[in-house]
Length: 111
Image (tube, rainbow, N blue to C red; front, side):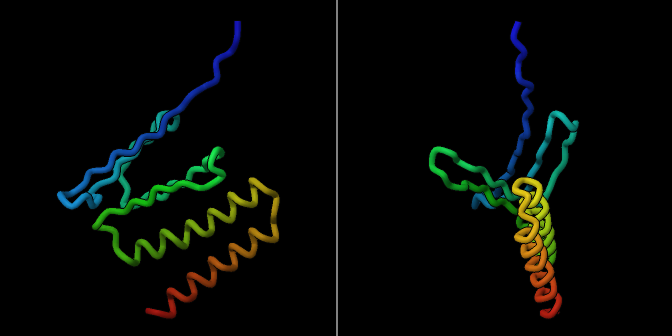
């Protein structure tokens, strides 16, 4: 008898206005029992056949510029963490974190 690989689903539902602009984004993950709404989502997918990154970038019209700035800053930092875990490239991950600090500093200068 062979073992079956476990499967899991993550679902997104995007409600659009008449101009196809997202008004509401809902997501759920079966394994974690998580179901929630969000104002933005960035999804990157590695296409091994094309050797290229595909992406879906969504944000609702209720998301403020301040929230978007914070969202991007946090994404830069978490990408550095993920990159370091996946590759062991500590020095480059530190460079990414340095850029995250620079990004944040420049945003604060504008205020």
